[in-house]
Amino acid sequence: MTPSQGRFLVLEGIDGAGTTTQLRALAEGIAQQRPDLRVHLTAEPSSGPVGQCIRQILRGRITGQDVLGRPGSFDPASLALLFAADRMDHLATEVLPLVREGWVVISDRYLWSSLAYQSLKTPWSLIQQANSLAPDPDLMVMIHVPPEVAMSRLEGSRPGFDVFENLATLREVEQAYRQALEVRPPGHLLEVDGTLPIGEVARRILDAVLPLLG
Image 1 (cartoon, rainbow, N blue to C red):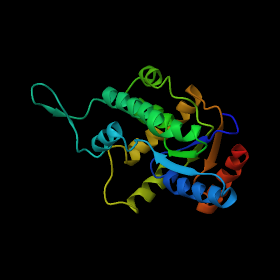
Image 2: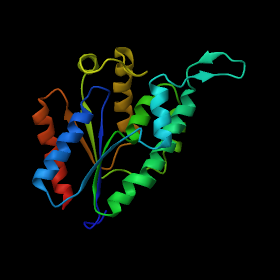
Image 3: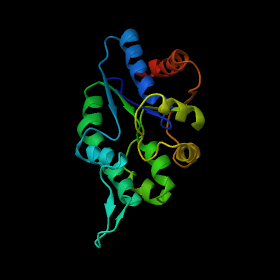
Image 4: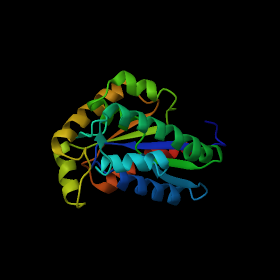
């Protein structure tokens, strides 16, 4: 992107890694260091119509049922395609319009979440093809946290969990993230130890972001 345009930044990590906390910390850091810039926070699944549907599926409010009336889980491949559709809608209606107007857009999750989470039950090839038009962000920040630490954080911070928030699944997702970074490496990547103090994680991320802002 040219200096006159904004920037698109992405934070990734397993549930409980602290992406939401660091999203806010990064926005505050940019506001302090670069008050001339406009910052917009967003997330995937998005707040759009497809994203809202995905959130209901993840919370178990929408489940699968075949034509014979037999209940089951929502089809994993269909869910992977919904994530891809939500991503393209998110980019087209929110992310890219703001970036073109000079905003710094920071997203809690993006393409690599699909590669990590949906690949547990869906072939890599389908996910990659469905997301083939999704552009790289200007920086992808991967926050690494052991699944045991992440699960402990989740248990102490919320009353309920979605379908991916259990220790066994988090272990699988952690490995899937590592594979995703090899299969689809981002153009610019920062890997951070999420077990460090919150302020230290925030400092390292901000130090990597500021040079990108012109």
